[in-house]
Length: 403
Ligand code: XIL
Picture 1 (cartoon, helix red, strand yellow):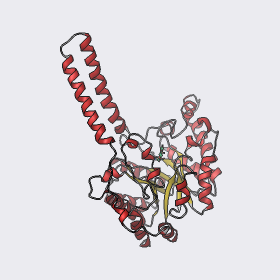
Picture 2 (cartoon, helix red, strand yellow):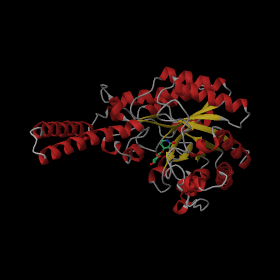
Picture 3 (cartoon, protein in one colour):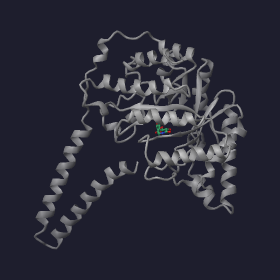
Picture 4 (tube, protein in one colour):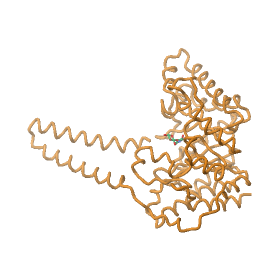
């Protein structure tokens, strides 16, 4: 994220400072105004070229449309047979794709936004819940016998977005901040898990505890107030709230090796030593700026499994532009997606593979800047016309071989 902001902030800073240089040198009648104006013009030109290159939509050949379409439903059928979850994130219950693809193609769904803390609240007011949007998604799935993944209880990354802004004020003004925070967390976890008890059997209890900027835990209000024990405590509160639910920690990794990954395993080992009730690790698997090294991914999954924990790929997507240089981008993307899924499917500890959206017409990339301007994104398993991409058949074949 920091990198992403830098892409915007650095050019803006350069432009503004050169502009000020031009204006000041003009006011002072210095000759240097020509140099400044020249640099300013060059900056504008470079930006315009960059803008053109990045923001002009491209079209890649859809060669897969020439293949015979796979049997509909074959993926969900075999997933059900194998006790594996092929899931999709669903943003709105009234998205017509939901009824078209669930339960026929997906046997698991994750509410994309409406079970998040802030999104559950009316006017961002702590304790004032409106479950209607989440309920609509969950009830349809439950009615169809489809599993729901709960996403997510405690997520400290962005104040006012991943948790209510009011929490900052409450903690800042509290006489005893740790006690106040614990009591608000417990209340939230209790309320939400009790509300969905019997309908949501698995929860991302803590989301994205790692920092995006360095080798440390995300320095959010929970960590700052309770230290890393906020993670342990969240899991204990969750087990208490619904003892039958499976409890996951969910994280996005840019790389599956390196210091940050070691920090993550230190965290897992510490949680296990402390007998914290954690059942598994959710791996988000967004491929945003680059693809991942799949050998390293395999080893990562094995390492988690060796700890006795379950694994799920919880939020897979891979922007088609990452495959733009390949002779057949959609096929290359599908090969990559299927390989990612296969690694999970082949490990008995890995219980599900969820794509972060029902189809390419419902991907968050299409509404999040700057990707909403870098079209196409097309990062998912079904295309905009709900036609399965080639990964579909490959994932089905991998599932057929799952022990
Ligand atoms: C994203 C949603 O897809 C977007 O609609 C929303 O605007 C922001 O959040 N990691 C997570 C998900 O755990 O909850 C995020 O979902 C994507 C990154």
